[in-house]
Length: 298
Image (cartoon, rainbow, N blue to C red; front, side, top):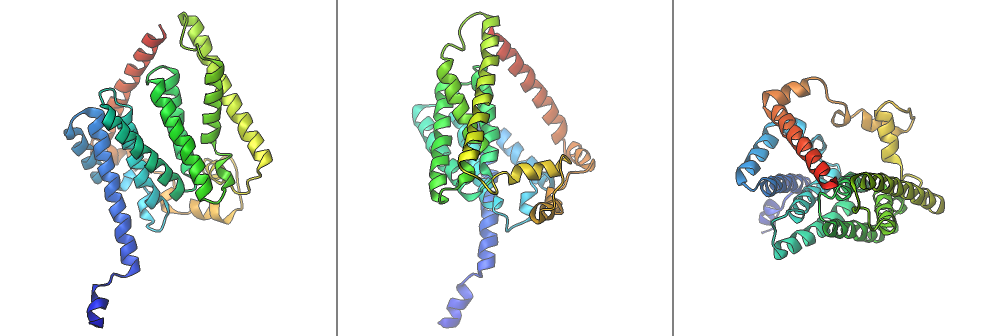
C-alpha cells in the first residue's frame, strides 16, 4: 500500500512544470476568445492561435525561463485583455457586460498580485484607454468603470502585499489621479466648435500629465521607495541611456530572453506571413482611427 501511494504521487517539480504549461494553455485560450470577440468569427481566433503556435519562438521570451513569476501572471493578463475586449464591445448584452466586468476585475487584481511590475503593463493599457476616451472613441461610462477596476485592484494589492509602497508611486495610479482631476475641471471638454475642442483636448492632456507627475513626485517624497524604480532603471540600461553596476540588472541583461532580437526576426515573421498581414491590418486600423477621430472632432 505504501509503495502504491509512492507511485501515484507526483514530484513537486513536475507538478510545478505541469501547472506552468497549463497556464500557457489558458493564455492561448484567452487569445482565441479575444480574436473571436474582435472579429466576430471563430476563424480569426483559430488563425491567431495557429500563428501563435507557429511563431512560438518569437511570441514570448518569458516561457524560456520556467521559474519566472511572469509565467504565472501573464496568463491572467491575457484573460484580462479578453474580458476588456468583450466589455468594450458595442453589441453586448447587459448580462455579458457584467460577466466581462467581473472577470476583468478578478484577473486585474490577480495579475497585480502575482507580478510586482504588473502595474507598468497596466499603465500602458490605461494610457491607450485614456487616449480612446479623450478622442471619444469609447463611451466615457465604460472608461470610468475600467478606471474603478484599476483603482480597486491597486488598493487591494497594496493591502495584500503588506503596504507595498511602490504601488503608490506607480505611473498607473498617477495617470488615474490625473485623469480624474482633469475630468473634474473640464466637464464640457467635448463641446464647442472644432478649434475650441482641439484646444480643450490639448489642455486636457496637459492637465492630466502635469497633475499625474506632481502626484507621483509628492508620493515619492512622502513615502520613500527603495526599489520602486527598478524597471525604469533597467530600461535605461537596456536602451543604452545609462550604465549601472547593479548585479541583478546586469544578470538579467545577460539572459537570452531579454536580449534584443536580431534582423532574422523580420525574416522569420515574413516567412510565416505574420508580418505582411500585421502591417496591412495596422495600416487600415490607423487610417480608420484617424478618420473617425477627425469626424468626431468635427
